[in-house]
Image (cartoon, rainbow, N blue to C red; front, top):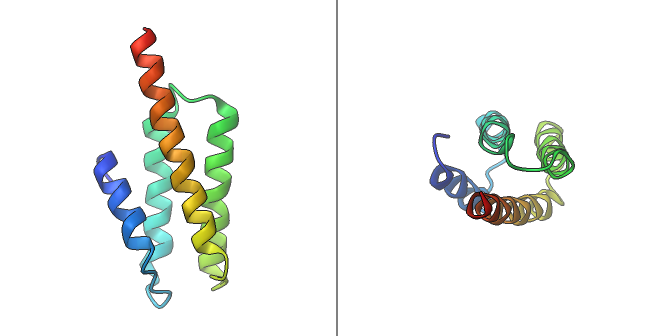
Length: 95
């Protein structure tokens, strides 16, 4: 992932999850790295830990093929990302 647009494209594609794809776990890990690099300077650690925890739960569930509640986790993750983007914008405007 190189930009926010790629991140949201991934979220949209995740809705149509295909558990037979082994690469989904890898892509989710790339998402994790992107979020760390993107927000580590502007977002409070508590929020980052919450988001990273959600991603870790998703990765574990994908690995274990336990996909029953994975969509809920992804929606919650997306919601948190939206919050982080808003928070970051406010911080930049105040600077």
